[in-house]
Image (cartoon, rainbow, N blue to C red; front, side, top):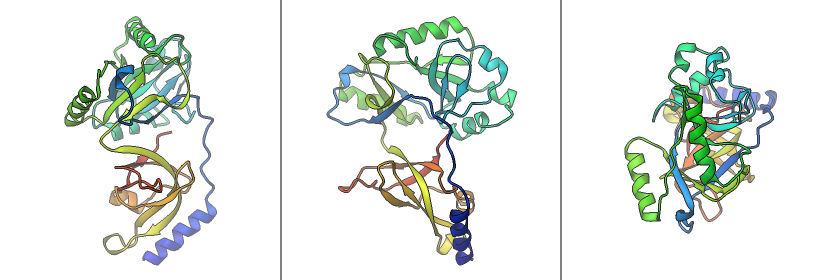
Length: 278
């Protein structure tokens, strides 16, 4: 059975095309927090486990550039200016919100649970500390119950940052985000935005499969993945049995989590987290 699965996976790898991605919008992407960072220069907020969504004033997009099929009433209530944020329900509800917002035909009742949590105004002038104030005004003026700001606070120092991080994690949250208070709006991966988590996460592309053994015979054993930097490694933990029976397709971008990096830059204790959202 294991040999049959291996043959099927190899066959799929040879015959299936690599998944094509839509043209992604230019957005700000976070780097990982390092202890030498002067946190007093940053505003902090909770890192929400939602789906990144960019609004250009007319259309709502995934970070990949693919349109999100939200109900008309949801979109009609949004302001005409660009917004960046997370589609979110509650802590620990990522799978639910992801399933709702990825449907081609929106489930009107399910979308009533979804909130659009705003943390940035793409292209707006001024430093982030001023844009944070603008976000509050935009949300108040919209007067719709599904549009919220992600509240910001000054962490003051590393000790207080760690205290707030511990509080969020104990309550079921993912971590914190730091945004440089005096930074103008910019796009791309930058230290302007930092994520602070007990576990770090990163993305890699599926380039191969290893068949399972023992209890996992006849299923996926591990994914071979490649990072954006070109490093390859095996991702063998974190999968449900259903995911092992139907593993992510070749060319899929997956998110994994890890504790730290080795001297060679490879992740320690890497574990599959999810398929990256569109």
